[in-house]
Length: 398
Image (tube, rainbow, N blue to C red; front, top):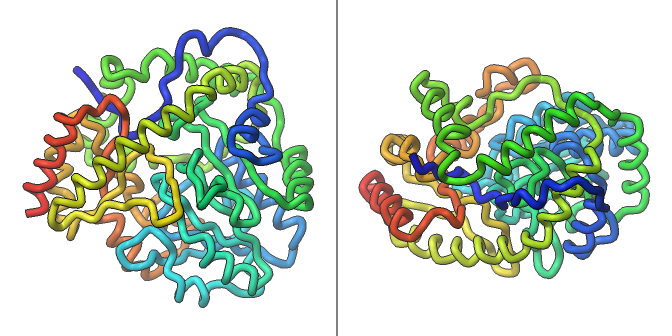
């Protein structure tokens, strides 16, 4: 069975896997046009390292404000850093935080505000900066899904005080997990390095596990084999009425915090020269397809704002209500076409987060979760198949 991935990851080549070593983080920094990037074992680990560093610099502050609809790993990272989570509802019909509520949440205990570049779209960082700097807090950009995205002429992650990228599978370039931490502030940069030294330890077992997973990704990330690696577990989880497992939102409390082997860094360094052309191709494809989706009444598809150039791992869109969204997913989710959901719930609605995430009224976040779906921007999704997805969306939206 031919199976498309839910996101557009850069396929690796067998030649990427040769033994070797390379200054991976510096090569990515050179590509992004920044002086320095700090390599961590995941985007989540990068967030833990950054927040612990910020807390050491401003120990009287212990609250972190995040959008209420985001990856559950964000909540786990804040908890692992020993800090308190504050949830901000979304703006109406958007993934950005509601500015009015953000102003009411921020205060003298606020350590950081975390605007999030979901789906490669560039978030409203300036709003977070306005609030955070009036309160003496940091802005930490969550660019986990946005490696290669730009705000103006510069990479995302530079408007705020710091930012981090993820190198997990499906997010463009991957080391099978990995993260990059970015700041222009020399005080923060030194604090991040010290936090890394205090937090991260070598782990031979994890090195071998990630190496084997990276080899498996290289072999299986293709339409002919993804039905085994991705499609079969997806359909099993949906048959058991477990959408959280179906999208991979079922995380445990343990966050791996370890170094990244020199070999995995060399694999990433070999693949990196292919990434710019890959991002250009997916960007061009996405622009055509966004225009097609805009022709469907009742569909909202999220695009770049003027002056922005996002990354496009997938297309994020909403329907008018949950019933219509579910009607579309009933046809498309198990069809092997790369249609999926991003995050199943607003953060308080994940059962395993209840001890660390307080329940609170979040009407916009819960509405967005109930009405949204994603379409892969993989280059393996041809125009005819994409048109069949549009036909199913037109039927559901009507």
